[in-house]
Image 1 (cartoon, one colour):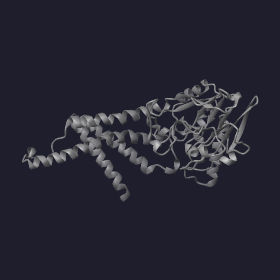
Image 2 (image 1 turned 90 degrees about the vertical axis):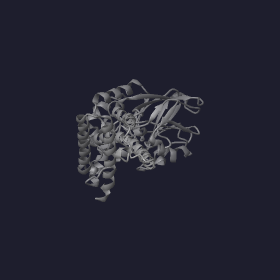
Image 3 (image 1 turned 180 degrees about the horizontal axis):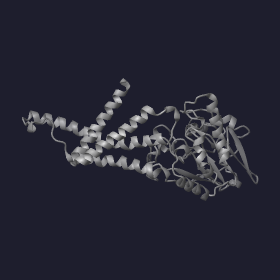
Image 4 (image 1 turned 135 degrees about the horizontal axis):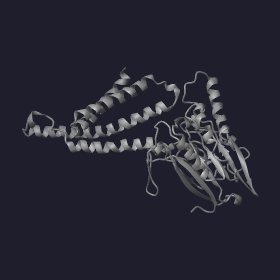
Length: 409
């Protein structure tokens, strides 16, 4: 019981201060009453979900909605609380000064709240509210095609100008708009790339999440070099309380089977070679390897038969793998394609000016292209969404990479 005392106390403080801001600005009893009623309903719904939701079920649409509702109601109120609490600190010291000056302040110890402070609190609170609302309604399907050219002095001549469409983190269990997903598939096909690569997390937890979307993703057109994929951390069913080991293994096998159903060749610690004329290019796919998550990937096994001088593209879901192992490997992996971070689905990106997200404090390589001694990793910002059912500032991404022969420009 004591473990709930602190959360309840925090909620009461937040609700008290947000109510103070509303009461200071709005004089209509009907509007204030409606505000209190809506707040009570939201608190009741979230509390009911917390106490009744089976945490072993994994992420589903109800949990995504609840997380979104929690964020969109609590974060603005936290902003108001911080501002009004700061005002109260100021009012307290102001009251002490007034008291020692001999002014009884009309019999009240604390001066009245200032309307303009509550107005500032409302204005600032509107920023996270509108941002989160945008992210949940528009941002999560605001697909962006990002094009990147990478130069390699040792790129095999016959692969000059090869293009790769890279997607990651589908998280099909979160989708709720078939038209938007079809639009994204059309964008993928419009790129007409030589190679289509998917770097893991096809579902949140269960293979059945993908069933309504199989026919849609089957429409990704086959490219001249093919369509290939790997597994991500969510594909192993690690975040669910299974009734038996057999049930977990059956789900895992069903997830692996999904890749064939949508026309992708799943690489499980293995590699394939492409030949053009006298040139060769090797594609390597490892299972998930993460500094903070499951380590099923084995770079040595995946690279069997691959030589140091071969031109290599590696698919590895978690960019911490590149940071910890790949960039220093003597095998010289030219390009690694990753995802996993989603760019936290929240941040600020203005090309050429600023690129920031809270996830950068956890992952050194979290979105876009990074390089070390001629070895590159590209981290896709993700196709879908997870946990928070939206995207603010960090949009869903379809990456198109062109390989060019020559020195870095």
